Image 1 (cartoon, helix red, strand yellow):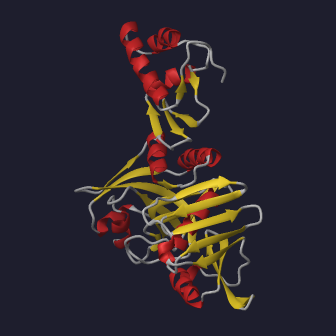
Image 2 (cartoon, each protein chain N blue to C red):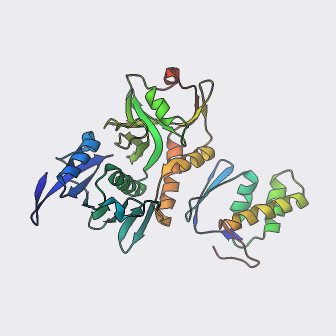
Image 3 (cartoon, one colour):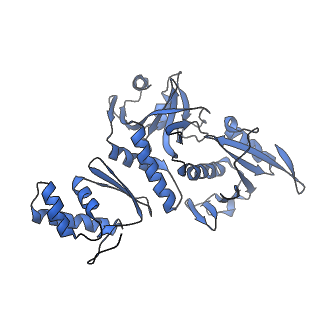
Length: 91
Length: 271
């Protein structure tokens, strides 16, 4: 998965604010969402991000973190903020 | 100022807001009086305009009153349309046209839109906010409808100069932010004072049983600021610029939540 090019984003503290440049919808990411967002480089899988970043930085078990991360990514993908693919995606 | 134009006298009214002068040309003398009345303190006949709009007056029934504002860039021109006007404007030759009926509200909207586009490229923006100058410093009071923008303007003591109760003009100049008065009036129905001052704070308004000020964290400040920035153009590049402008503004200007009881005591906290 990778970040859409049709967005503007800024990490402020441990939160991220993202705005769609298509419809100006605004999204706020909490610290966990920010970690996933920053790691979305088009090459690293979500499962690897959860295992190596989320579980390492937050007190959460792998199963719960994986479910929450999947839901989070699906929601951003619906709004065109993240581009999700089974294969690596060039940024 | 007037000059002949194919048999009809063409009049020019130059309106300067935020240091940007826009000329409106029309052959209708009555419309000139409407413009002079509405923009009174902002009419600067001695200033050379940076942009000119020719205003063609048409019957009100020419348009679909139900259609919302649309702003887009096409073939080198900005196009602006709403239920009560159609306008086009070329940034390259600094000229445009407005087609509307003889009312001050349509041209007011075109001016607002034009200024949002011009400001976006320089780090400024129009904000849905009242604003005022006290002790040489400007204060912005922003919020959605009913948050108290006009209320706080009405409560201002006599040492306060009101810049607007509706649309605040924020300009970035030499790395600092300056608020200018605007003729864009809200419920007060009166234009703001045509003065400017460096911005000392942005207050996000909320009516409350008591007066209280709390600093707003940067991410929340940017989110709430973006909700209140007036921007109409469907243009990816400019939307991205507005986003960056909001982030830069929050990094430079303190943002507070101002919960206030609607009486004059709230102004003891400001200035």
